[in-house]
Length: 228
Image 1 (cartoon, rainbow, N blue to C red):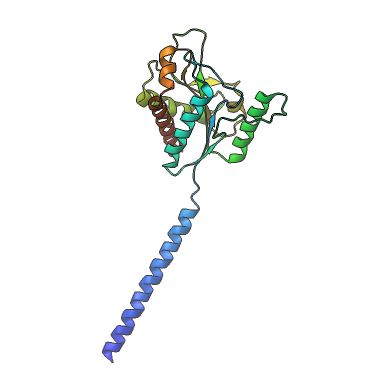
Image 2 (image 1 turned 30 degrees about the vertical axis):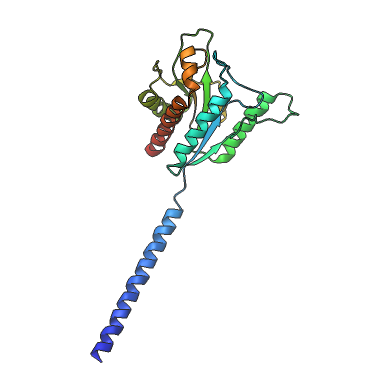
């Protein structure tokens, strides 16, 4: 009889432990589900009929922008960050019937950003100037956004640390860029380098340097998100 009682009590004890573990696992799973993913919009500038800047070596800004953006997406997704690209191929965000395709393109980008619920927006571009000596990546932020400034500083620092451009620049405020002005969350424009400089144009056109820039930008984004 004592042996039977022992077996019964043992089974009851095991059952209590199993039920307890199940409840704990369900609580942990439920808690995990309510933690939202960070959402980042990456905006490769230009595309389609709009090549953007044309490098002194013939490189097209739109192609470099897209290549870097796709690499950024890969790095961010490896950290379980949801990434939305405004374009994933060589296409403009306008209709052929649009009379002002540039304006239509910008409006579509702004709409994608507004509807995305993004925590952060990063627009990728290349710079150019009528004097060939200028080099270096520079991050622009909306002048009325303190959070945008913080994001810009994180990204600029990582570009300097890892990509090591020949000229080290500092983040710069701007109050006229459409995407910065129209974006409700922290947003920056990364001008990755000068296509008007022979040395930098050649470097920007290589997968190795594009990869360094993408890694740097993704690290800056992640550091900003962790700081929030």
